[in-house]
Length: 485
Picture (cartoon, rainbow, N blue to C red):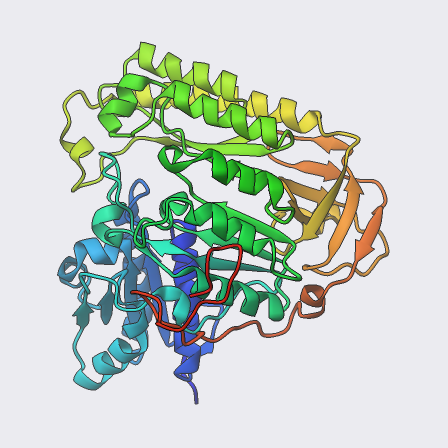
């Protein structure tokens, strides 16, 4: 019988994308998916950025130990950022782990599992640089209607709180033609929405010397027939140019949504974070975005309690939040990450102070989000129906999806047969702080190929494209992206 697998994913969208690749590799190697920990192979795809990431990993490994003792043929693999960081330490602390692999060698997972079985010994293999760009590997996509497309990996910034550059490496960019070929392949498979991924997505092009490459890529995505929605995450204010804003405004399928990490509204804290912008520059970007895209929903990341943060500096963050009027914010209490400069800084803020400031920030942002969502009551929005978005959908007999600006919408389907992947128009009857509700009748319903594919196995294969390096000598095909090389 075929061996089964399950993957638990922690952290960012890049990890989600990597997990789809792991699943594709395992299924290509003959494994079958399981939804439980009774699988023959359990893969933990870890994050090293979030607070208590280490404790979560070793806690999960502790829970898996008795399962493995009861089933000697079971294998446990640990990948992702924490694996890249801790390496042999994982096997030392949890000797029942069979495989440890890093962010740069995802493609080796099936080989390492087989080697561990054959040798009856743990296999730890951590590449120091990227071996194969993840998007060229086989994938088992989780969605029939949406797909991730990685345009770059790694980061050239040196933010003092962030460990990502040391775990993901320096930025490596795919050629524009490779990116667009994957987008076109996804659309041919029925995908309606694509999210372009990068640790610093709008720095795309730095490796091949084109500062406007990201704007060109957005415009080129607008020329892909059948692609209805384009999103991207996450940009950095330093590289956010007027040309990118123009490309967003002038490309109809680029969604009116922007996630722009602020981190802090205090210039002195931003300086200690080694962020290359200041509050005034950040707010000027938002002003330009709203001038060109009035309905844009702008979200952000904010860290509370960075080392040395004073009450005055925290008030500066609250002031920027009031001026920025974000649609939503991912707010974090600072926690030291070993290996980062900030972890060694003096004046670590007491936990109780961080918690109190965090609560004030959340209350302010919730108020602003609620005001913005209430302003949408009575508006008719286009919603791409999703699966698994609303935890109470079964109890409320609602379905859920995302509006073009990324807001979560819960709606009442009535008697219509609406599938995830279909597109509906609904009138908003209530705006809550974190979602919208449409309890009236569905205004329109469009069945899609993605909806037809709902419930069927979803997968793609690797495109067999070059991974890095100069374009081939053949003449490129002209495109809005400056070449399909």
